[in-house]
Length: 589
Image (cartoon, rainbow, N blue to C red; front, top):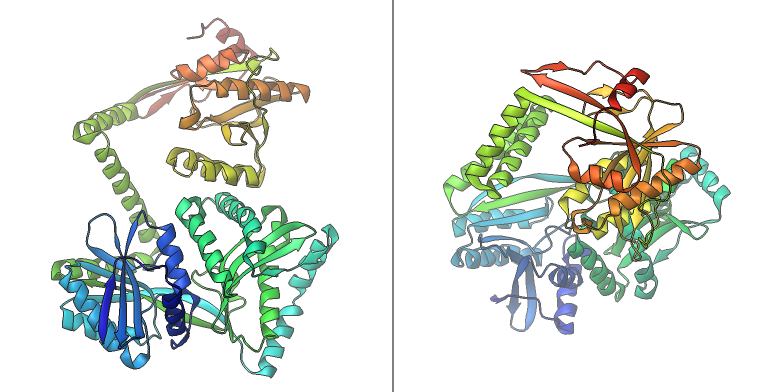
C-alpha cells in the first residue's frame, strides 16, 4: 500500500470518480464521505482549515482516502476535514484494508508531530474504530473515545412493514388537521428539487428563515457565518451534478412554510438542515414536511432509511424506529494531556447526572470565559480597575433616570433617506446576517427576539436604502412598564401613554444621528395612533440625552434610586402628579 499525502484536494474529475466509487463501497455509504463534500468544505473553509489528504494506492488503484485537516492556528491538532459539517465521518477503504490504512495515516501524523488528533462523528458501527485503537497503540498515541450523538433513523423494512409505517404516518390526526388548516391558506405542494438551477434561487430564503428561526428561540444559527453559507452553496452545486442533493419545501401557495436541505445517497434520504417559516408555526410545518418525506420514502424501493441525523430533538423520536451512535475519538501524544481529557470527561458525566451541578458548571465556565476575555483586552491593570469599579458600585450607587414626552412633531427625521418600519422575523434574520461579525449586535438581536415572538412589545427598525437596519427600537404601554434600571414598575401619567425603550444602533452605524431619526419617526407614528410617546434615559448617558433632545422630546421628570451597603432608597415611590410637578423644576443635565 502506497500512501500519498496532499496539502489540498486537487480539482480532478478522475480523482472525483475514484473517490466517490470508494465511498459507495463503504459498509454503509454516506454522502458525507464523497469527494463532492470534501471539496465543498475545502473551498468554503480555506481561511481556517489547512487540508491534509491521505490517498492510498495499490499500483494505480485508489484503495483508501482520508480527508483530514489542521487548524490554521499552529496548535498541531488534526481533525476530520468535514468534522464540523458532516453528521458522519470515516476513513474510506474496503473493510479488509482499513486497519493497514488507518495505521499508515496515524504513523504519518506522528512523524509530522501532531500533538492531538480528533476523529469526531465516527459511526460506532464502523470497523474504523478497532483500526484506530490498534493504530494508536502502534503510533504511541493515547486514545480516549466517548459517545458523541445518537442519530435517530426511520428504517424501512419489508413491503408489508413499509405499508404499515406509511399508513401510521398518513393517518395521524395531527398531520391531517395541520395540512387541512394550511390548505385553507392556499394550495399545499411539496416539491423536491435536485437541479442546481432550481435550488440556487431558493437558498437565500432558506438561509434567512433559518437564521430568523434560531433568533426566535434565543440561539445563533450556524448559517450566520459566511463560511457555512458558502459551503451550502458549493455543496449544492457539486451534489446536484450527481443528483445526490434534495432540497424539499412545504409550499402554501407560493410561500414556503418549511424547508429541508437534504440528500439522497446510498439508499438513504437525509434530513440534514431543516427550518420553518415562523408565520406558519401554529401548523407545525416542519412536522408536516418530515411526515410527507417518510411517506414518500416508503414508496421508494431504492431507499432503506430516512436518516434524521445529529441532534436529540423531540420530534425525531416520534418518527424514529432505530438509532445510530457516533463517537468522539481523541488521540493525544502525551500522557498528561490524555489524563486531562479523561478527567474532563468524568467531570462532565458527573455534571450531567445533576441538572443543578450542570447549571452551576456552565455558569462557572461562562464567567471564566468572560474573565479571560477581559484580561485579553485591557490586561491585568485594566481588569483590576474594572473590579474596583464593580465593587464600589455594588456598595455605593446613585441611579437617576430622566423621562421625556414626545410632544413636538416632525423633528429629526428630515433628509434622513430612511423610513422607520415594523420589525418582523424576516428583518430580524436579515439583520443578523448583516451584522454576523458584530457580537454586541447579535446579542441585542437574541435578546430582542422573544419580545417579537410573544408580542410583548412592538419592534421597529430603521433601514438604509440597501435595507440594512441601522437602528432598532421598541414601544410598549407605559402602564406596568418594568423599569429594570430602578427595580420598579411604572404607572402611566395617562392611559394613552406609550414607552419607547431598548433603542440600539449597531456600532458600525453610530455617529450619523439614526437614534434621533428613529425615535422622532416613532413618536410621530404613535401620536398619529392617538398615543402619547414617552422615552427615558439614564442621567449619565449624555449621548442618549442629546439624541432625545434633538428628536424633539421634552423633559418631564426624573426618578432615582440610591444604594448604600445593599440598602436602597427611593425604590418604593411611584409616578404621581406630585412627583411630576416637583420634577419639572429639576434642570436637564
